[in-house]
Length: 113
Image (tube, rainbow, N blue to C red):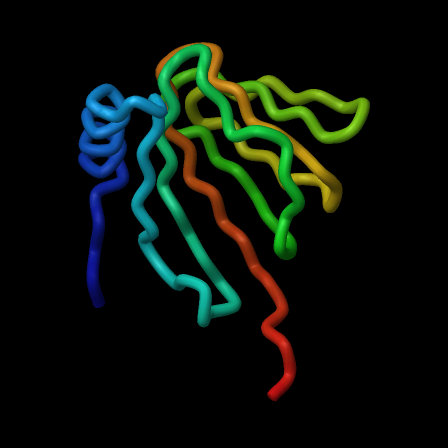
């Protein structure tokens, strides 16, 4: 079994986000485009966002550090360190209120072969 410190990874990704012009950085912990389950640590600096997009499947968001705002349609959710939400299956966006790190978990159905 491989173990990862989410606290250390969050700090690494925040450091990378501070050095990036986009104000964000990410690291996929598990999965990828060929897997059904994908877990990604995403760091966003305050005032930056992941613009509105569709979800490729069922998804959840856990705030590891900071304060974020998730918008899905007419609904909004404010999450702070330790908070968790299932992302509604519709177009959504994520804004960082403070420098933040989240764990995004996506379960997508792979096309049948």
